Image (tube, rainbow, N blue to C red; front, top):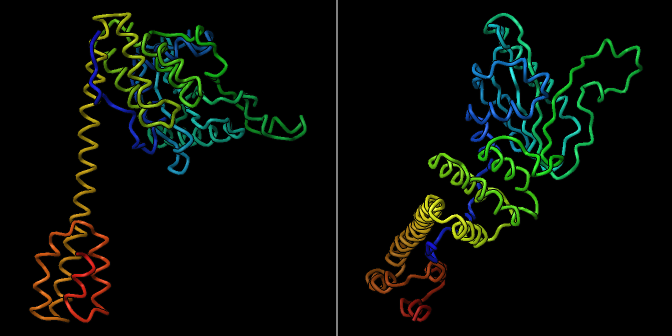
Length: 346
């Protein structure tokens, strides 16, 4: 077994603002992953109409800034089979831990923005297949059509907009029924359990799937990005959980896990450097405060006590406690002599 240093990386305490968005963009910005996902999760009668060799990302986001804490999105363009006719596939990722009953309204809003974009660019509309990708714990109990939001008599419905979106609800898919290659399954499992208490017990399954990726570099990259996501998202994992799983799988898989050990150790170095940088910045901030206090004390001592006051400065420079220097600065106002100030720090 490869021994991991006691300094192996802990899960980072520094959280990025959008960890779910970052992981979503990483996974679905990979054209091969997106292709695999759509082939396996679109309804067959829709999927068979599409020429996946033409799939490409068209735009990375239409979501407003104020909604990015809850929603992420990607727009793809693809041709129909045996045709030059293009249409769009739009994935809206709902990353709240509960569903929003007004997601159909959000979809309609973004679809209108997409259509406006194409009218400006090519002066015509294109077909859009809207997909909602959901990984929350709550069951998705709302209908998948827009008119479900409207409470109007049947005779009026023909005057109202209507469309249906395709829902991919990870909470409703059993782990063994997840489709795709090992990389996609590992990523989907992380999406599924990232906000759940079961994440700790599912972590071994995730790492084993990543270890089974035939391309060693892809396996290494997949694990690194998953670790990044686990580090930046608020989870139930403790510092030793990931290391424990990696060691367990390394013992089972032997040499196949050597790349994973390298990833873990490398992350330890990176996080150690980051921690050192942060500590250095904090130290630099303290040094800056201390210098400002000493400059202020020197001026105040000179004004109040002249040369006798300035003779305290070598002693004050040896004081490391910033709070004590602040106390001395305040005490100068009422002190009657340098010796009275000296009695505060001796």
